[in-house]
Length: 140
Image (cartoon, rainbow, N blue to C red; front, side, top):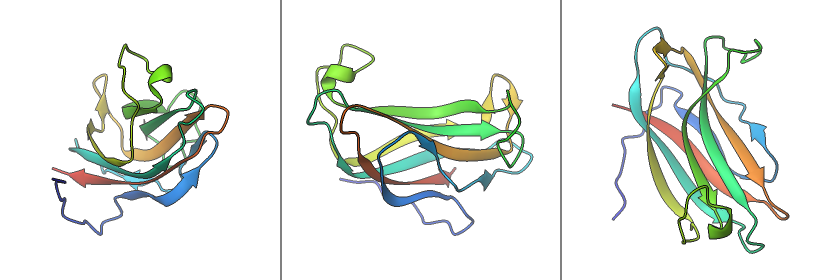
């Protein structure tokens, strides 16, 4: 059974469903405001190429104190999930990942610093890398 989350129209959709075939930052920047924010990053994967057994996808909520994410040294990786073929796992997991919903807890605090802005970043590795997913944030 999939858990449902209330749709929030305050700009927390951080990636529309589309294929990603190369590592890249998303174009949507979320303003968390000045305070601490906690919630879940909901990632709905509808397609993922792992047939070459060398494909891996890191989906990362990046954090920054500046809206442009343009100041060197200011981008912090926050919550993340790694998906892909079992041969690419960072641990000794022996299971391929599959399409479906992934729920990753997040906060905009990292190392004692509260970051105002967030965006999605996808790292795609492999000979035929392609992952199609949508992502949004659900605040607690």
